[in-house]
Amino acid sequence: MKYVLQFFISLVIFSLSCSGGHHDKTITEIGPNDVKYRTVFFEKVFSFDGDSSDYSFIDIVASKNGQFFGFDQNSGSIVKIVNDSVVNQTGGIGDGPNEYDVEAKPSLLICDENNLIAFELKAARYQVYDIDLNYISSVLLDAIPEEIVCYSQDEIAVFYHIKEGIDIMHFDGSLTRSLKFVEDWPGNNLTFKEAIYTNNNFFISYTFDPRLAIYKVGYGMSDLISLPVINRDSVKFATKNISKSSNNIHLYFYDDHISTPKAKRKKGHVFSDSGEYLYSYHVPSSVNYYKFFSEDKLVAVEDTLQRIVIYNFMINE
Image (cartoon, rainbow, N blue to C red; front, side, top):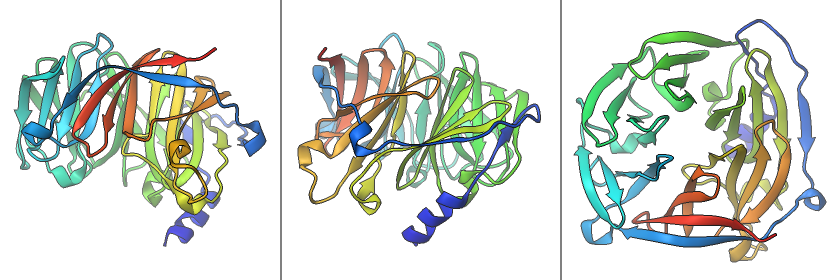
């Protein structure tokens, strides 16, 4: 099935359009000799160990001013962490308001400093909280979301699993516009993984495939970039594998090939917000997944999903 999926991915070509324009697609293969590794240091700032409280974090998010939140799959709750303590917690397991199906991999999102958004992959809705985790509302959607990303400080972009197009809306659900797909998009074919939006571009990662697609609003796919691995069958992704630091995009995956030393299996690849490949780096083996929340700071979940760590990201010039 995996081979069929990968073959099908290579055949899928789709376009986004909000103005009916067309733009030729550039396909770039980054070979092993093209990879520019830089030495980076992950300097630990502080960590929160949820083992004593039986936390297991399947998503994390941080605001720009350094407020941290995690989704605990054991309780179906969102927790707010300050320093090394949980200061607020809300939610629960279920399908009602302020409840979550933990099997549906709930995700968290912060687009401004005042609100947090949570959504599931099996419910046609998202839920809105203030930054202190006071529940505000549940917003019903036309279909189940595949991904929700920040579009601006007060707008989100909603990708759907079976519904064509992307809806741009305010946090309260009021629709501002829709971006339509000309052909099937990867979500319909189980090839799409995650997305991020910046500089008029959607950056989209793929499942089981170290590639990055760039969709320019109004033109469709502009670039498809492939990264080198020893064997594509050994590629694995973390739960969350794409994030933004300042004007750069970080794509994270790990190559679990037996010939790759364990210390070098997890890798980050950095692109500019226009899609130019910049450099790559090795990620500590203890990190399961991570997200940048500023130019040089990231929040990571480590080991058995019970420890949240804040790191300074420092490049050795």
